[in-house]
Image (cartoon, rainbow, N blue to C red):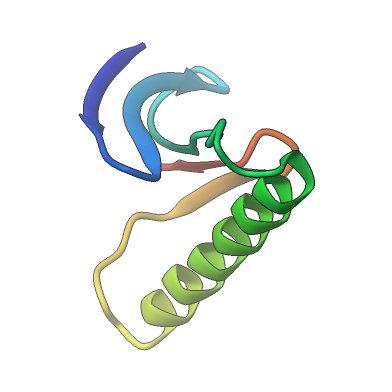
Amino acid sequence: MKILCRGAESIIYLDRFEDQKVLVKERIKKNYRIEQIDQALRKTRTRKEVKLLTEARKCGVPTPKILHVDELNHKIIME
């Protein structure tokens, strides 16, 4: 795992998935939030991002291809 970028909401890093090099975006837990609210926010934001990336790609915008979404761990795995 090689971290490429760390922001306020997520970490973006290189990893391997099904024998190929992938980019992973993982939303990080905020300890100052109530656990249930934090889980709900990260889940909702991950789903929205996947939906927007998918729609943008359908419209011809060059976006990373989504290979897998891990809703439990709030990760988006992309080509």
